[in-house]
Length: 85
Image (cartoon, rainbow, N blue to C red; front, side, top):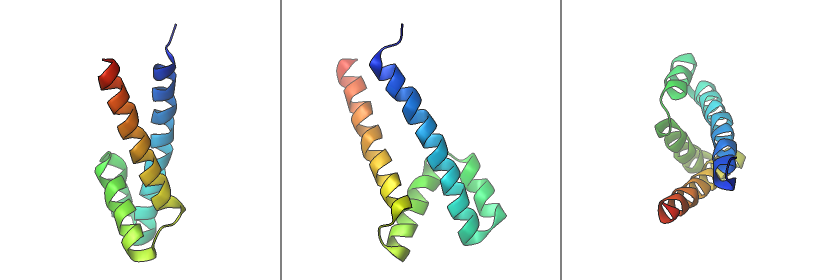
C-alpha cells in the first residue's frame, strides 16, 4: 500500500518531466538544438536558468509561472517529508 505522499511524489515526478521537456523546447526555440540537448540532459539547473531568463526577457508568462509554482510545491513537499521523517 502506498501512502498519499508517495502518490504525490509520483505525480510531481511526471509533472517535472513534462516541465523539463518544456524547458528543452524553450532552449531549442531560443538557441537551437545544442542548447536543447544540453537542457534536456542536465536536470534542474536549466529549468531555473530558462525560467529566470524568460522572466527577465519577457516578464511573467505561463512557462515562468509554471517553473515558480513547481519550485514552491517541491520545496514544501521536501520540507514536509523531512519534518515527517
